[in-house]
Image 1: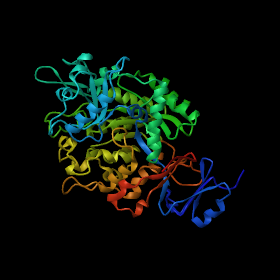
Image 2 (image 1 turned 180 degrees about the vertical axis):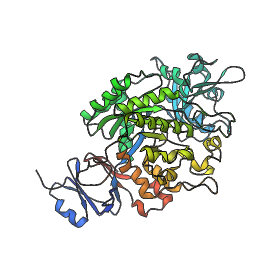
Image 3 (image 1 turned 120 degrees about the horizontal axis):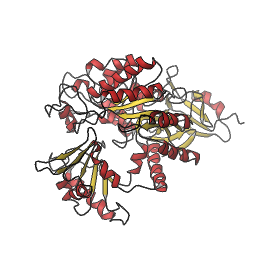
Image 4 (image 1 turned 90 degrees about the vertical axis):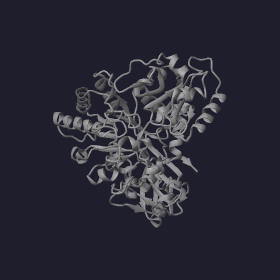
Length: 540
């Protein structure tokens, strides 16, 4: 075997995310592992006749970004739908939907005349008017249309779509779902949480070939942004098998930590018969099982996030829970007993409290262990619960791009929670200072999967009012939450998340030295090279 490296990067500024060796100048890779980290002078011994040497040009080399909250498959499957994430006005909405409809005439297949889109902001009607079926009818009335909000917790449908599925005069919804009705008892077009399920069931589904093609598009995007691992937040055996098939074909360019989705309707036995089996079945370095994902509540924007006190702009409204407390606790305790990591979506402070309560009860029942259970999002945390994350060993899995960066953002979120809660909203610094471990991610496709936008947000967020604590992050801490701490959040801290000999060669070479880049310019930094498992999967 050759004693030389396959790839050698020199003259760079390495962010190693390694407490004993935080920085270096050069790194060598052989096979799928890092074999050397040190000075450019020392690296010369790894140079051989077939070594590819890359001059880092003084730019940052760091561990590949690990996105701790991702929806790779569902996000990829929507890549060919109507994109509205960059639309900021009703005029723009009209133009985008009309243009897409013209380019996608009705298809003869079942559901093929439906139009579906995602990424819509709340209150995107004319002025600040909320979206409704009439506003969509004004754009397209002769084909059924459904548009998901950027957070996928609310959808808006036109009149024809509502009538096609029998929702025009309302209907039954599962817990926390709502078909919003007007004063005449007719649907406004706004469908909260599970209320849109009947429409989703009618939309045409891609076949296996189409799924793989779209998934490869999503993987390519991730590599382009320097994402080398994702924590996939929705799944089952069928979805994990799709990733495994790509791995076997040599086409999987991002590592996937695949969770098993549990809903309030999931059979209790599925936790052991399906979720626990997933952990045993998928154990490679590229595709792994081991966690379950649940939803405690909804989102603040649609008043479905669960709050201790009422919403500031809707007196008497506290949001709702997807579970009865006993049902939820029983589910968490069983998953914990089986050695599964539990990840729970919870945005409201009462929802977060319920999740922490369940983790505490699981610990009392089964004994304290290295469970690393997680709360996902934590948009609002009650001050009484801040200390509990560190005490219970619970990971705060948060998404920097979810937070409004300033009061000027026009985000309805700020009005919903009210200024009295602002000090404990998206409380990155408050939680970290209390000893919590933070793992960062994007929640793609809710926001861009570009982690440098998230890093930029951690540096440039402003307090929303005088006297609020500054929740900005030290740059090193922010990067650790995308690397070493994110690896810890999936039990892989001995394999990845650091530039260290023996670790997996997941590496990103950026376009600049981020530690010498002004905070306001960080969003412009991008990967020049992304490497996964020792392979270059993206090169600019």
